[in-house]
Image 1: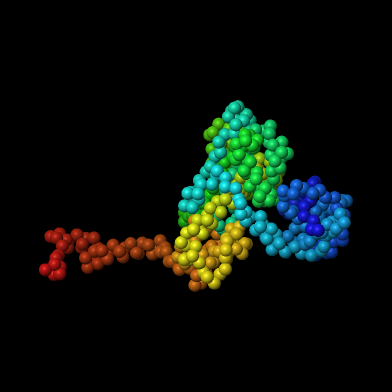
Image 2: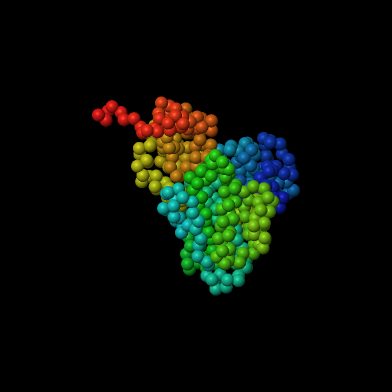
Length: 427
């Protein structure tokens, strides 16, 4: 039986969060065999996906990582680690499976099919929850997280969720077991989102949420601007600020905000504190696993992105391009998770690339994967854009060509002083 899940605490958990250490107190050399060790483990909820974590009993801690030990088995209630290197592909495959939209993803109210298929970004705000409608002075906590930062296909979605401070952990963590969306099974994410959108549920009555769907087209366009390009971090910051302002404009009394960082936490937090000085703001790494409101926001973002990706794929399947652009030599049925590391995604990109226009609104043209395919020899049609000097010469040549005998403005004015000549063809 494969051992699949372990909760750890203390220094090992802190090290894992920072994602910097693979060996702790034992300092075992990389590649050295690891003898069987009995460990103290606690199985977590079956709603969670497998996590490659282990806490060894005694004073020594060991955390398997990509470059660490490969397989672990639970045999006779003992956890035995087998030496070897964990291939990056194993980690990548787990990510791909987790990021692929499920077949029955819940279509939340944040899904606007018209905007999505047109490649337009937009924002959605849920109605105020009943508890805040009855008492507008209720102090609230708010969490922010995103989904879809790395894929080459589909939108990036920023979401927030807010609720009364008094219900923060009891409702989200204790009652409904929200966690980082990446460790929840897809069907569990959809179930939680469905409850949040069901009027009779306690989640709907106490929680409000919002989403900013940032289309692949707009993300790439801002990043590829010839003047003052807007990188992904800047766009993410703008989305976060706009969402928070939208909630405050609706009269919600937000006292605390928790955000999963997109860069150095101190810099991000300082900027947001300047913008919202009356609110206590915490920006932290792995906030989606530390603060329940951020965990819930991550679920809103992930389910919205999954559904948006499904809407885009349906539009592709029903459009004429799905057959006319396809390369029959490449077999593909789906674009999978939309991540460049997903073979289904790269196969779809190769199979459905128009040599002039590339792809549709589902693709982020600023991503290296798309650029490389378009610039590959014999694949895309090359376009030479004139530079500044070329542009000036072109304008001058066009101007002179429009004048009689190719002369300048003065000659043209004199030659037409008594009118223009009439060609013999008119007779």
